Length: 219
Image 1 (cartoon, rainbow, N blue to C red):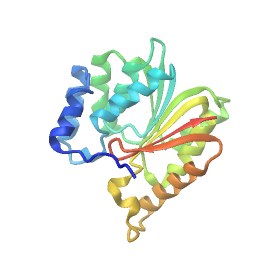
Image 2 (cartoon, rainbow, N blue to C red):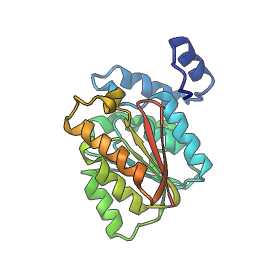
Image 3 (cartoon, helix red, strand yellow):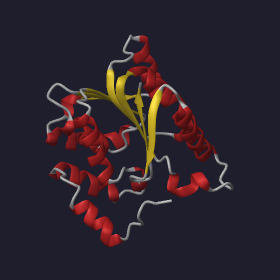
Image 4 (spheres, rainbow, N blue to C red):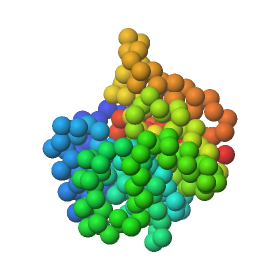
């Protein structure tokens, strides 16, 4: 069976050199976040480019983000949206999202990002209750892993047919294959991967980008 090639540092640098087209705001925000103790929560740079590619290809206009952190993923997606596009961005941390705001402002996309500081399930449920089903084009899930299945189900309601849900950390640094790992987060990721793989409502793929990205497009 053919396998994905192993990335050396040299090859990874080559990938970035032929992949990234970051704005100055993206680069500075990514580098600032890398100095923080929680830096591992940030998506990889090539993952941001990949999401920009996805939202462009499907002609996304309305998007969801579950888990904002310091706003790199929001910034990447917003820059790829057309004029008038929008992101409903869900997070519970004023501290982390306040890091994002100056960079969103400088990039000229702050007005596109509807940041809602509240538990994400509350925000998603409010969107469903407001009749927003099938009205979003793209959703990115990168928050507390224990609620991944619930986030996926809500996003599946809100995404239109042909829309895409992208879920981060679905290879979990390889721990998804470690049978000795039975903590709540690891079990939740395994559960989601299995559920989506078997879900007849979507077409899905699990790819080796960043820490693993699970993609599902709604039928």
